[in-house]
Length: 106
Image (tube, rainbow, N blue to C red; front, side):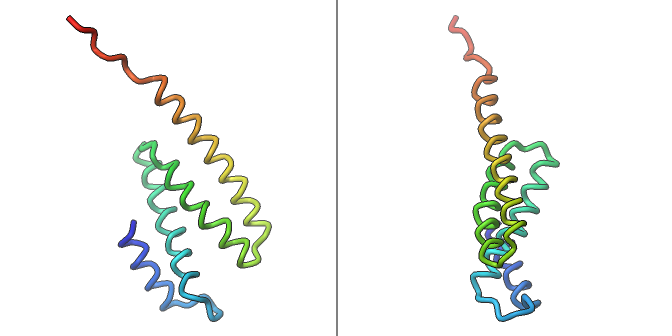
């Protein structure tokens, strides 16, 4: 993730934002890009930890969209974040309740 963010940030900086964007903007954009790639990959592989990646993407994405003036999209992603948090809590509860019991002592 860290290497991907560093590489994507350099690529995004070279491509430019179409306006004089500060360096933190490209870092945040790279975080969202790499997080989305990793979360989608983890979902496709059936890994349940993808919830945590989506939470990280939303924690950066919603404020970035809000700051950039994309208010309807920021609100939409905030709604997605609520779904992700709900899904994570449900998954966490299910994973704790479905653990196999310890082996009985003989």
